[in-house]
View: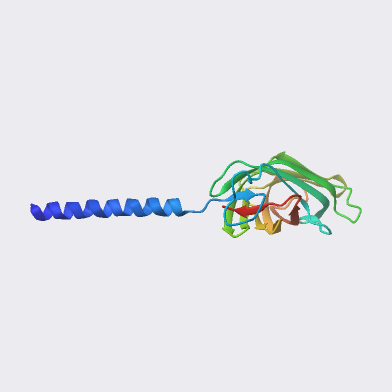
Length: 201
């Protein structure tokens, strides 16, 4: 009987130790936060980003790669962080495309947003992270080329850091459309922030 009590106490002690270690590990997890200044590892109070604007980097174009590639000369993204987190939730409030086309004139296509994207930003290093869309839908229309396609943004990934957002042929699934609509497309582009923005804790 005494031996059973000893084993029971030992088991309780082991469970308590595991719970304590688990709580310590959870509290040690780093959070992710967009910050206006970069003076250390963490974002000081009052330096949190309330609204975030990005445009295509100078001298670059945004590309939707498919059976027929569509290139855009200008893209403006406005997003709002929804709070501190791990990852941090980001809500895109505006996604505007201009000068889009299948040829050098860049004027025969329009890209419109059917559903503004939601995304998660996960910090992977000092001023470095990965932004992953969890929703969002874009419609690409090029009447002269017979293109009218809707793309699902869920799962699209961008690398973040150094004042840039980069899409390197990230996958976008095609949900339906007419004529030249593949089952999938790829988004490629380099964006830069309009104001200083860093990925910190």
